[in-house]
Image (cartoon, rainbow, N blue to C red):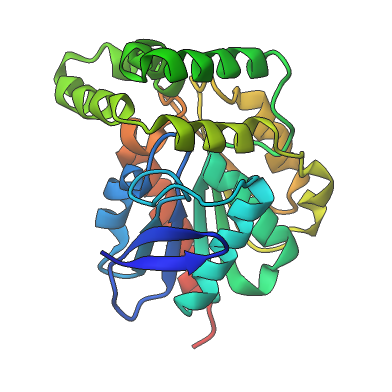
Length: 272
């Protein structure tokens, strides 16, 4: 399995290969690069698609050192340079979006475009922090299996949770959550809830930016994404009906349509 050595950790990644313009996918808290399976399938014929797992999540080993959101952004920077991706398209969901905004504001020469999915530029709302820390405390005592139902309600919209035709997908998501590693997940959660806001840097993002957000996202409510999009010059906001906080899984057709049209428009605008 391919790994990239970063500062104090190893990062697992998957690379479709090919000669197309690279697209780097950065996943959300608790998940892995597998949450972009539908997007990679839609784009791998025309683009080189790379997914990776943040340190301590998915198939990446636990971090040997403490880390925060700035370290996660540095990890992505190392991966981009190590794999010779610049300039690449960057697609980040939730935590991945926190990373993507930092890269776009501070290293615009490395990115062709930025796609932000189910994410926001402000700090974690104070009312969320005790709730998430309580979940982490309970997981430490009892494991994540007993916490799967409340986490599913945070991560997915009711239309996904109650659709009888998607029972197998829900089972797969629940199985993934039940196997989360406690210490590594607590460290990742803390990096999210203690992150510094980046609103003051959004005016520095001048690359083409697409914002995709579920109308039913309960983890990052839509008005936070709308505020973020309004602060990024020239960004395009697309609301995804019926989607919650995991829209790449919940509404893959809508996400794929918007994302494919966006990257294709940039390809069409490139000089011959």
